[in-house]
Image 1 (cartoon, rainbow, N blue to C red):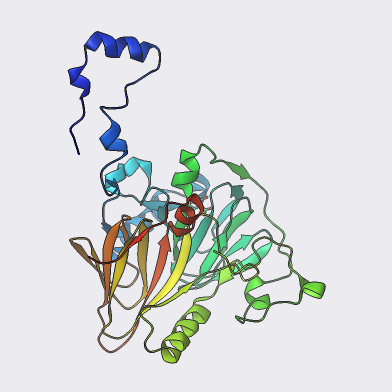
Image 2 (image 1 turned 60 degrees about the vertical axis):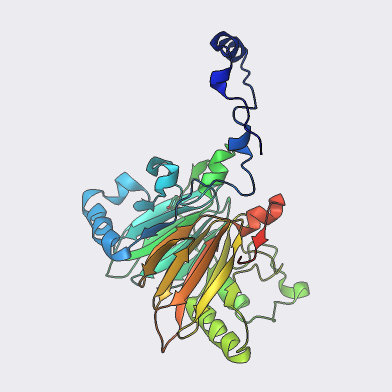
Length: 347
Ligand code: GTQ
């Protein structure tokens, strides 16, 4: 690939004349925006230790009352994007949110989609569009675009969850905004009950749920049991992973980010192809070594890391005698919808 002319090769007056007209030459920047063979990511492999983060989150609980925070969140930011941009990857925002007993995070709705992965504590709930979703460890709760949501806590210990939002990409599109609301009235109907069994849907004539997001809570007990059953049924399966889907459409649970539950079998080491979307790994149970290109992180329970796209990954269970369970979020649905999704097999 030949070298192209640089900005310095041009007369300064010429560049200045162009800039006054809001015009710039392409060729000095061409290789930066279209790098040869593979993208040059800003996203750095980044690791966040829950043990290190937790005391700071509890301190935030002392420093900032709910009325002054609205959402009391410490953001897991990727240094490759600049910490203040609050991105784990181009499309993924990650935050650890703390709710103390008796607290309430008021109702609002916004254009970015969010999910919560409950990390610790019991007794909290999120009400989404009138459906009150109990929160326990490992549960996945959706708050899709435009739906009202608020968080409350009737228990007696701090509750922490991981927020995953597509905020960076929605913000980039200049489409991010929120609307404040009043406390919701809880309505009857629970998607986690109506859709409790895979392969069985409420019959449309009587019960067709016209909601675009019929299932808002995916209990961890169910996801874990489904992983165990899959592993037992298909011992030769190359990867024991389930995708969180919309039970009515079978498609991705949300439009932009994808969510999965992964079981690493005892002693298993899983080499994944380099895929175009960036991804995030969070340990629900057990522990895992995550190799991202030439970097390696050791994840204990509740730890989180992120990986840029186009990078081969290897996930290794740190337990020889028991499975480990990971929550995975990625930019897959976005890449597929945009037509830029790619997979490159290990070299
Ligand atoms: O709980 O609604 O981490 O609106 C960032 C923005 C959580 C929430 C975040 C939010 C929320």
